[in-house]
Length: 214
Image (tube, rainbow, N blue to C red; front, side, top):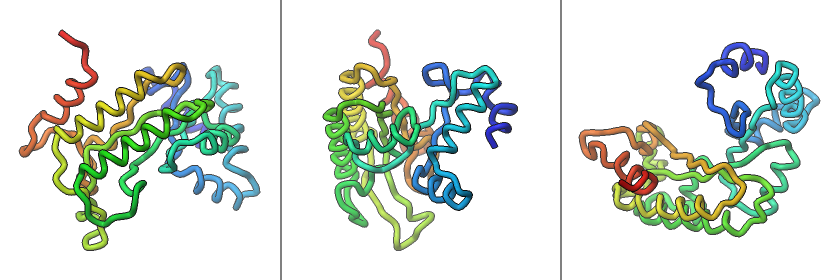
């Protein structure tokens, strides 16, 4: 698989690099480790082997990012640093402050700001790539069992982005990266792609918070 990455992806000029290394996001470090153990390996050993292989081809290594919904802490950073990751981020913290089936999107914003506050208090031994999300409504996929965050708006999303920017501005050594989940995840109600309802307002909100002043 790593050979395939090298031949078909890493050599492309448009491949996303972080600190000069091709970035690979591991959706579930826990599942990677469990699957590796079935082969007599570990997630850590597989990351090390992958890094060794790409360095043989002239790369600096792979910037592996652990994608986890754990609240940022020194313990979390220590764990993923020892496993060989270059950074960690969140996928979606929709239930981090309680697995409520239905809540207003304001609760989701509060949850993310809680995460940002937690991330600001760690020692920063492992970079945290900040996550944000414009909403969550997985009824298209999960029906009556769905988790729903009602009444999302660009204005409420702006409050989340302002919290994210404050954390970005405080970070001293971490790559200043914001992960927005997602561009067009309509099956889970998480999207910033222009729609009939909102037009370009979600993108304009991102520009408002992060764009240069004119």
